[in-house]
Amino acid sequence: MPAPGSLLSRVGSAEWNLLTDEASWSGELYRILGRDPAAPPLTLDELPSLVLDEDRPKLTTMVTNCLVDARPIDGEFRIARQGGDVRTVHMMGEPVLDTDGSTASMWAVLRDVSELRRSQRVVSETRDSLPDQRQDARTEHRLAVELQEAVLPPWLGSLRLPHRGPRTLDLAARRLSASTHTLIGGDWYDALELTDGETLLSVGDLTGHGVGVTSNMTMLLGAVRGMAMAGAPPGQLMAWLNQLLDATVQPALGSAVCCRYRPGTRTLVWAQAGHPAPLLFRDGTGRVLGAPDGVLLGATSGAVYGQAEETLEVGDLLLLHTDGLVPGHTGTAAANLLLDLAPRLTRTATAQDCLRTVVQEFGECERADNACVLVAKITS
Image (spheres, helix red, strand yellow):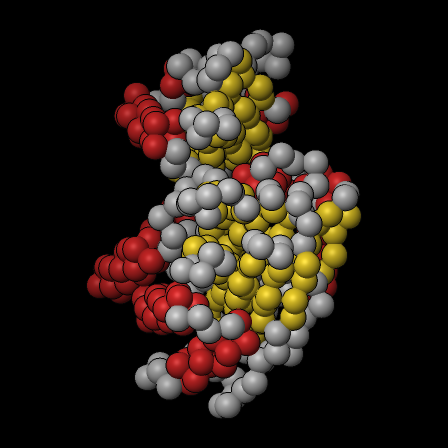
């Protein structure tokens, strides 16, 4: 959690059960919304009563999209507390799906971003003399967002693969935005069912920000999918990606992990290019998988990438992530903080529950860069 007194220090959580119409709020959420802790939590139907009239349609749309279309919530609205104090609240939420795929409840994390938005307005007002530069920045940001949304996987919530036959994998993923919401980079996550019955899992990141980097990311992700469909093993796939990035007009460096999962033998074959290794959680503990050799993509021509194999078991959790997942920590330090969650993660019933735990722990921290996380649970 953020340090006390930071602009992001006030974070609360809630869950609304659609089957019983019950709600559960954390103590901090009562304080954020200015509610009496002794009062019952508001239902989803009652929540808009706290919201300013002009922001109610926005909240209604977010909640409806979440409950009806299983789309994650990520937006802001203003509330009026007792005494007339107006606060800006940022809400991130997800549907919790029942075994038949219907929405059973909705989980959310809410934070008071009033001071942060106030600070950003002050900074924005100092740039009023640069309208052309602001317009260019907005245009580039919009293009980068549209590119990223167009190529990242369209599935939301849980994904169970393969689509036909026994389900062997339960998957969930999330992209976490930088605190400024203005830096769009080249990070990605992906899961793809291959023609031979195996599944491709990958995460990666390109250095830099902006539409050029996002464009390169879309090219790399398309190449990963195409080469994997053609049967390229992870090590060879990485070598070809390195050649591709080395040949681009705009020089860039990238890191990635690519895995092929064979459900028949529960074998994970994977390679990495200067990227954090996958984490494996089993029986209340977790460990970092031993990484094969692999340098950053684009760092040197003709690089050779090794492969590693891991035999998995039913109930195992595999976590792939980019380096910015744990704000303020990288490498071993970040991995250790994630491994500390092992007792909680291995008790979760689904990949989505596991992802929710990770997001609750690290998703609302103030982060300088975007991050992606993908969770795979072995189900059979």
